[in-house]
Length: 237
Image (cartoon, rainbow, N blue to C red; front, side, top):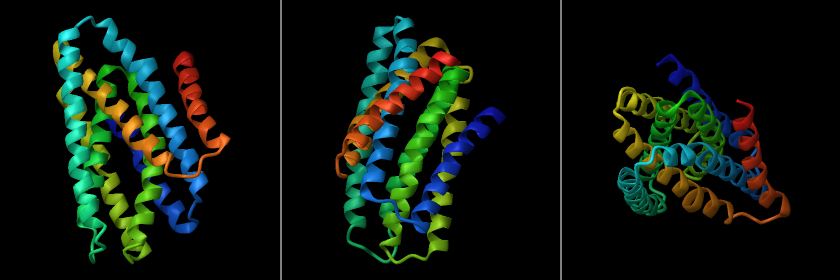
């Protein structure tokens, strides 16, 4: 349990740091695009280098189909719900409760994925933590910028971001507790769920948001650089 808490602390700190950085000096769109491409490359590397081979070697296609299907349907449902909540938040009410609920769901799921990673193995958990730390750094930047547009004070913004970031601990612990002594078939199903969720994160969130920023050769290269970093780390551990 202490290992889960220690590792989950890194993405929590990254989210808070991203918010602080944004409030101190707002990064330009190119910098945000670079970070999002980098995070996408790192997450994709974890999927292809660590989780996918682990799922394949278990030779349980039926459970893979079930877990992967549930993962896709869950992510589509979350995306549909959060999109509606964000549309309500775009009305610029006095307090963006709908937006915060949408972000909280995403962060809680990220924490759960960290728990899944450590249930699969210490190395998988550490590498997944690195990947989601970069992704949540980007989230902290974006969330603080969004909250600032509602006229909230810097102190209030940091309180909200810190509270939401802390949900990572809850998600990680829940994921680890559920899977700590789970039978093999449950592990295969949940790993496939995590595989689908992470692929959705790359293709439907990080890359979509990254392509909303100005494209440069450096931002495009950041995806491959992130992939290479995790590939080398995986080989070195």
